[in-house]
Figure 1: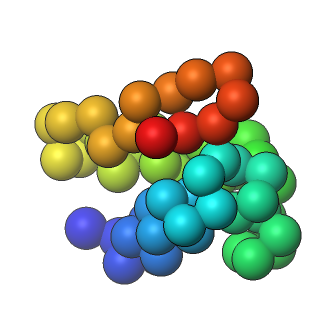
Figure 2 (figure 1 turned 90 degrees about the horizontal axis):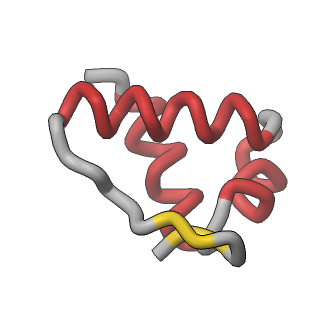
Figure 3 (figure 1 turned 135 degrees about the horizontal axis):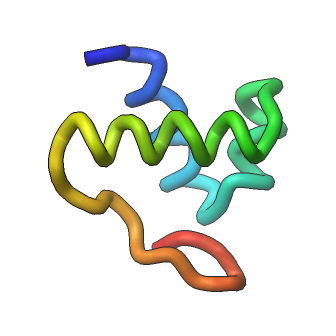
Length: 56
């Protein structure tokens, strides 16, 4: 497991979406989305419910 992915997951969870997480992490929303998707794949479960307005 990549501990950086957990850090990115936490930033998205706290911020409610990719855009807010990218400010904290200094990465693009696309990169944050890819890394969260990779974490979900490695765990075999979805971690967020995705909405147009953000993540739950």
